[in-house]
Length: 358
Ligand code: NDP
Ligand code: GDR
Image 1: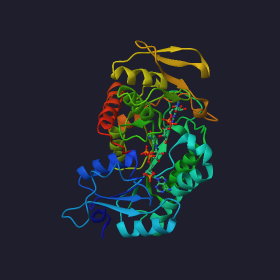
Image 2: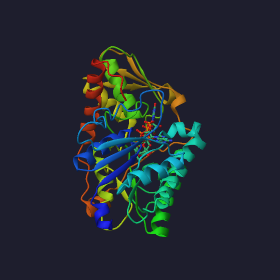
Image 3: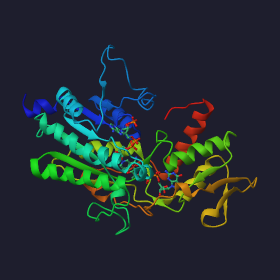
Image 4: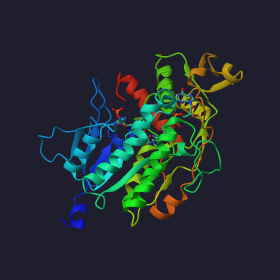
């Protein structure tokens, strides 16, 4: 098969398909006419909640979405899946993606996020597809870590601040190395935080939106958080998966920052979320003794729990997406206010239905 015939098949392989981004990317690629293959981990509990609505039994007519069991720590299965699927595009989204957890599971995080990326790139080489596959790596604004320059862009030096970020630094450079060594079409998307109603429940935005919904529904009294003065550049995951795809449609492979160009504190996210339910939060006290009270009822709705502090914190992230805008025409569509509202409303509706997915 010629290269043109091979690429015209439009077959995508997604690692981390059961995650927040994997689910949005699958929807996006299916709409574009791709055949989509995803790698899922064997689990004794339910881990397909985010893709359940897309998945159809493979015996049905016209199915274009397929799942394969595998793991980023197992190169044999990665080689097997790549050889079998013969993808035109590979999106490496699988990761132990929780920064705080990476301090507790540092070796595992390195194995999955750093060496897992190497294993996947090597599986493509072993399968003889180096010059046929386009590769997307889920790199992260966590690479910037300690502030060296703001806003952060493609040329800003890295200063990772967690085992997660250090593992992702390896992932970033091994992708650059395979591009330069073997001429692979491989790109790093340096994505700033992106959220949605499908965000994992232990990430701060979803933790807040769920708690605000549960407080609104009378199911929870108080929300416990760590550093509420951290600042993040938060966008919507749906906008960011389009940017991932765009990176693989360019004439030559390059690395791109995707961000909104705005930054907000965790504190602001809390205030905005409560405002969606008509509540105003007023702050009293300082440091670990700070509390957030309901302005009308005086009830304490937010407290600080130092167990959520990180051994090293990333205080400020603010991205500059100019390159992505100028070269690919990418721009976020969903605003910060729209994101907060969508998440809180979805959690209220989910709570009303007793929805326990995600
Ligand atoms: P999630 O945590 O929601 O999803 C991670 C995915 O990786 C899940 O499908 C998970 O499977 C899978 N996974 C974890 N460990 C393994 C493993 N050992 N083998 C195979 N699969 C594994 O992350 P997001 O969707 O939010 O993020 C996607 C990627 O983008 C990640 O690499 C993340 O680090 C990166 N990123 C995310 C940003 C964000 O703001 N969301 C910003 C920048 C980068 P399971 O469902 O079974 O747990
Ligand atoms: P982050 O996201 O570390 O930026 O990584 P997270 O939502 O976990 O934290 C954001 C900020 O909120 C502060 N924080 C809390 N965080 C959590 N999770 N729980 C709390 O109770 C809490 N209280 C305060 C944190 O200290 C931090 O400053 C995410 C992940 O998706 C990574 O995979 C991705 O690479 C980066 O975004 C970009």
